[in-house]
Structures are given as structure tokens and as C-alpha cells.
Length: 332
Image 1 (tube, rainbow, N blue to C red):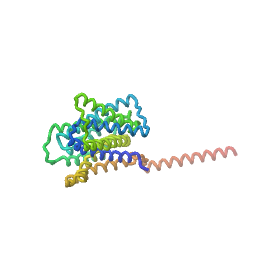
Image 2: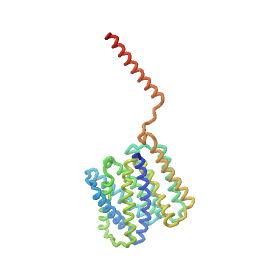
Image 3: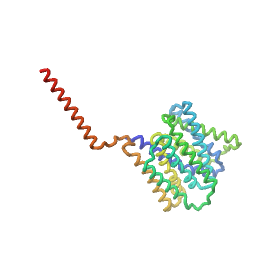
């Protein structure tokens, strides 16, 4: 039987793959004449409709408490609206690969916040995984041959900081027992309303889809929104924010593999080294989660404690036998 930790790990890895497809869908939609605001409004509106129909079909209860309402509203504002806006904005100034690399400052911030707020242990294995993933992502970013745009760099770094706060907010105890589909329904709804309000305020709403724009936006909504967010929230509840953020470093590799498989790009030595480093980080986290104390197994007991326990049991048994013999003699 698959343990809860293993399920959570698989969910986070699948979520990272689906999130990794996001730059591909976004850039394809930009090519059809959409800007950041309209792309994100369409993305979250379609995702909200999709998860609403799913919850209706499965009869999932959508009622939440006032505290949960406030936490999900803040998660939507900081996590989905501001994070995606700053990240998608960076795509307009720097390459998606460099933007995604800078975005991945969030595991460092997440680990620090999880240690402070949730007392999550910062172990040697986590440090090793962090160093491996950071080295791999850095290799993907160096020597790209592009001119660095400071505004694009700042947008990408801001997205990473905001996403770290989003992960921490979703790990709050108030949301611990909340159904992942219910949480995603409210987050998508809040985010769609926020982008709609922004579009109305700036008089910038474009709903004229070309067939290609509609195709890529729908895929962005289904895979990089609905599936990715539900899987991430489910996995987060099982393995915690620190490990979830480390496993999410698999996301940049999706972009590399899409380039090789879809666009017939060459897989150079630099990309191979980065892949092995990031996969090493993922395997380090997985191996760490298999430790007996974290996998729900009984921790090993020193031999001397076991011997002492057995000796005490024998002493108690001998004492009971003596009492029984004494009582029989008194009766005689």
C-alpha cells in the first residue's frame, strides 16, 4: 500500500511538470496578440468554470469558514494573482528560462519561513537538496547569450518571493482539513475577480480569441492551473512546505524536455549536467522522506534498552510466582 508521504511526493512532482508547461502556453498566447492581464483573466476564468463544474459533478461541498475565507483571499491575492502577474511580466523582458530560474529563489525563502513558523526541521539532506537544485538551475541560466534586462530580473525575483509566501499561507493549520478542490475553487474564483477588476479599472479587457489563442489558453487553464494547483495543494498537506518547494525544482526541467521533444532543440552538455543535479536534489528529498521516523515506522531501539526491558519483565514474573507460592502455603 502506498504511504501518504509517497502519494504527496508523486503529486508534487506531477504538479511541477504541469507548472513547467506554463511558459510554453503563455508565450504561444502572447504570439496571438494577448497581453499579461487578459491572458491571466482568461486563464483563471476558464479554470474557475472547470473546477466549478467538477465540484458540482462530484457534489463537493464548497462552504468554508470566515477564517478560511480570509486565508484563501490572501492566498489568491499574493499567490495566484501577484505571483503569476510578476512572473508573466518578466517573460516580456527576459527569456522564460532565465525568468523561471530567478523565480526559484522561493525554495530558500520557503525553507526559512517553514523553519521559523512551523518548526520544520532544516536537515543536512534538505541543505544538500537545496544546493543541488540551486546549482542545476543556475547552470541553466548562465551563458544564455541574451542581454540581461534589470526590470525583467526584478519581476522574476519578486515572483519567487511572493510564491514562497503563497506556499506558507497554504500550509496554514486553518486550511489543513479543507478539501483541495474546495480551496482551489475559491482561489480561482477570487483570482478571476481580481483580474476582472483590474481589467475594468484600466479599461483593458480583450475577449477576442483566435482559435490558437483559445487552444493555448484552455491548455494553460487545464494543465498549468486546475491540475497543477490541486496536485500541489494535496501534496503540500502530506509532505509539508519545505519538501514541497524542493521537489518543485523539477519544474524547469519540463521546459528543457519540451524544447527537445517538441521543438527538436539539442540537448547540450550544460543541460544534461543541470538535469542530473536537479534530479539528484529530487532523489535526495525522496530518500530523506523514506527515513523510518518520517515514514511512520517504529524507530530502532538500542539493544541495551531491549535487554533491560526483558530483564524487568522476568523480574516481575518471578515476583508474581513467589507471591502465588506464598499464598498457597498459607492456605495449607
